[in-house]
Amino acid sequence: MKLLTRDTDYAVRTLGCIAAAKENTVTVTDLIKKLNMPKSFLRKILQMLSNKKLLKSFKGTGGGFSLAVKPEEITIFSMIEIFQGPFQLMEHVFRGKACPEIKTCSLKEKMDRIEEELIIKLKSITIMDLLKGQK
Amino acid sequence: MKLLTRDTDYAVRTLGCIAAAKENTVTVTDLIKKLNMPKSFLRKILQMLSNKKLLKSFKGTGGGFSLAVKPEEITIFSMIEIFQGPFQLMEHVFRGKACPEIKTCSLKEKMDRIEEELIIKLKSITIMDLLKGQK
DNA sequence: ATAAATGATACCAATATGGTGTCTTTTGTC
DNA sequence: GACAAAAGACACCATATTGGTATCATTTAT
Ligand code: FES
Ligand code: FES
Image (cartoon, rainbow over all chains, first blue to last red):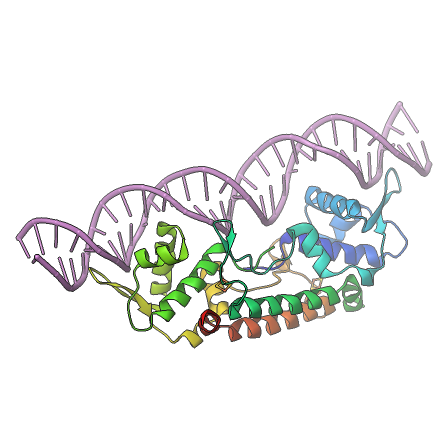
């Protein structure tokens, strides 16, 4: 069981690198040297981040990527939602219908509270934390 | 992104039903009537729980399953580990090697703390909570 | 013109998920 | 003993997700 898939993980680290470069643009070629990731895969990830408006991209010679938003505004939570779909700890339906006890169930209630707290925490972690770590 | 897969979810609810029956044994046939789950799938799940020593099983006419441990000792966490493998929020390796910054990284440190707290909470939720909900 | 970059998109292999089906074994009842 | 009612073992399968590759088009600095 894992919470972060490979692409989410790559995305986070890549954004860290791009953030470290400040205003300068960074190319995919630069990144794979530093981060040792498969080029095509990383390109796909960066395109996604670009489409989601987290990166500005520049085509042609001397082009590359730079952050479109501040590093402290990019959360782990948003990365998970982008690469792994909507966040939902417990689906808890069967055969298309929600469990009949879902309104009163103490278990469901507890799980929901855990989910809430987890989301808050995942939103409190940002690319900024990565930058701090690297110094 | 979801934390609980279908089999984990089924297992939890099924254990709730078996716990509610106290000392009496419950058969798969009984369970599918109550819970509306696919029979073969549920059988596989129950066998797993039986192998993991959470259920006692009795073969033959009048047989079935009953809890092998107290409902308050069966946690959601243990269900996740049984059906979804070892719990690990963040793998954070690439190409088989751990990230070189893993010792000092502020992000990794924060994620690890979240993981710890989450595990504690998931261990605090048990089948007992389901029983309380049903009353 | 050309080379260096990203954009769009299609494809693919491996694994995980959500099941189903079959045959065996045990055990209570007639 | 025959039979039926249960679980045990296990093989199989369809679909979705994950992790990744490859190709062609477009933009832009030199
Ligand atoms: S068992 Fe369905 S909501 Fe608790
Ligand atoms: S980036 Fe690898 S441990 Fe933080």
